[in-house]
Amino acid sequence: MSKVYFPIRYVDVPASPPHGGNPAYRVSFGLEHWADGSPQYVYKVQMAYNGAVAGRKSPSYPEGTDDLERVLDAMKQIKKGEGKIARGMIESAGNEPGVSVREAHQLMRDE
Image 1 (cartoon, rainbow, N blue to C red):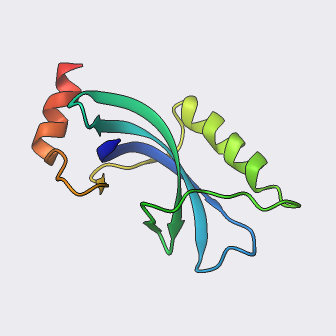
Image 2 (cartoon, rainbow, N blue to C red):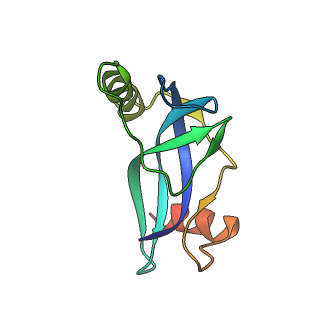
Image 3 (cartoon, rainbow, N blue to C red):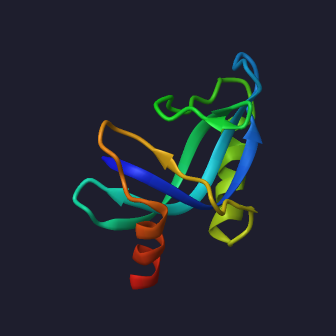
């Protein structure tokens, strides 16, 4: 399980009804600090509401919408190196603290 996620780039894809609360699928690529202490580069899809990621809410794609296709297209963009720069964003999960910003920068330099 990850402790802290540092997105590097992302694309927000608006979610269709019946999602409420100004929803979007945040498709991203970044560095994740795993529980065993290892840094891993990962691709992620998270739910965001009003621009803030809902850490424990898994994305769902309503039947009869093109949400899934648009998320897959966004993932292709991210894999090509496109998307918005996510510099300075930190997302934590779990009960224990993850790594500090300074530690994350060191982990990225060590790669």
